[in-house]
Image (cartoon, rainbow, N blue to C red; front, side, top):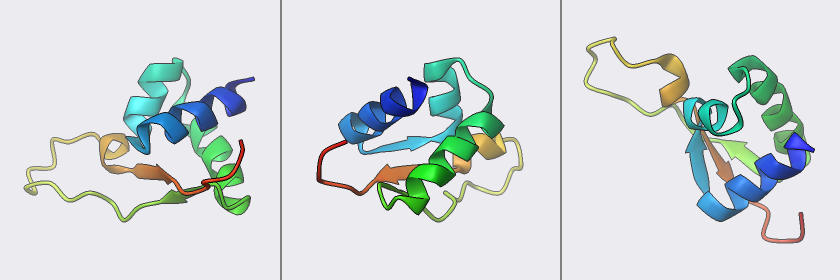
Length: 75
């Protein structure tokens, strides 16, 4: 069920950080990463190059890990 919700969320929002997804679905980031990797293998999602911040090292790594919906077809 959450895999389908994850796809709907990304399809609607186009891009999201792992931190945002974990907060949205109240799910562990590692579990979401596994689901995202499945969607990557299916060609529905791609992982974007990590967002760079100012170098202060205070940003949570999960907030810099970005994913994007790429499949314009169904589901």
